[in-house]
Length: 506
Figure 1: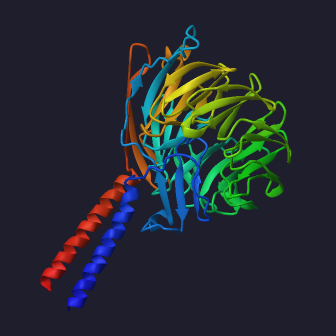
Figure 2 (figure 1 turned 180 degrees about the vertical axis):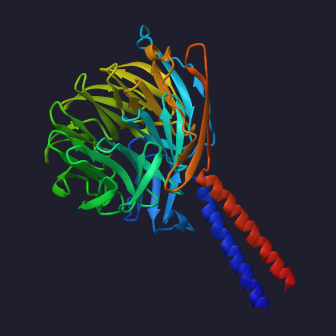
Figure 3 (figure 1 turned 90 degrees about the vertical axis):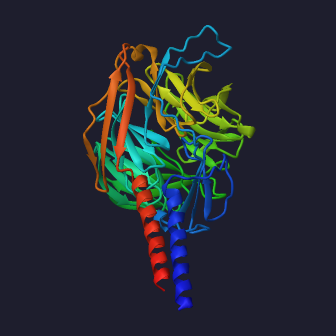
């Protein structure tokens, strides 16, 4: 009898510990990993995603994890700042650099509260929406102007990372890293969930054939999606972390990020046509349509590789730590975000295969180009500002939220949206000319439903005398994390209560 009693107690304690181990990631408790690349073991990677800046995501598959089966045998480590800033309206004037006291900023910043952990966004020209990927909550926030008009639930523990828009069908595709699927969004609804390879991360659209290519980090392939169907898999190396379409030749370039591979795979349709060796730890690709070059940032080399077609035609010395890059068609420059030792950052300005400038700015977000004014925006922590670059000069530093990790330009209103990972908001940078009128905003739907779950969302906005909304509130019901937290707490309490009843009767 004593043996049965102790056996029962052991089972109860084991079950309780298991549920608590699941509960920890469900409530968004993460461990800080700092920045940079760490180990290179076969089953463990430390990723520097485009848009994550100095923050890193560490994951391991089937290796040293405890009770995380609900997350598909993955453990995730992501730094989260306990300070949450949900400020709404902030009339922030861009700070003028000391070396250019005559310049004026002319920017207004408006902060929109979102669900949390946002690190990527895309623009949908068919409806004017900006879709914000919230890493921590598995929620896709839909913004119109300066209002959240919907919160789309992607399911439980999906860990969404990236998104892409397909103009051929109007769909938005979102990779769910933890459950090996891609959610297909139409407007504010999930219309399909497509099973792909293991740990899908980045995606790219090919307008020449209408395909969406999905980089599967832990598979040796890329999934090719047409509409809502996988039509093929392209055999490439393990660890693809970034891909790019080159309109000059119709090729898809995919980084092979597996340890010590250091190559870029060239794909046409569903076939590999070449494997191009590049520098150490390639992280990002950018196309220069003026010369047909594809520039490759090599994180651990002191140069960028230049590819033309299927061959390396040159290298540009930028120093160790090159991460993201962007092309400016107004001047033909390529801007490269470079992380040096001790967290020092800069932006290198490249023309063809020569460095024509180095700008000391606080970088971390991928540089983006604004065609309405010819500016390039790049931001980062710890200054929590976005630097505005014109040609070879910094013309303003605009304060935003905590740890800006990604930025997006919206051509419908001229706004620049900045994802602030730690402050759970999106900063909207408005040029002075557009901030005097009321920002574009859509009518929020009363209900947002999907094939996986439904979310009720409501928002309210008041308008200031200047025409800019003075406050924005967004309410989202049905967050998967809150529901899971409640279910697990109730389950643990019931198990413990039953254990006491059983022991008392014995």
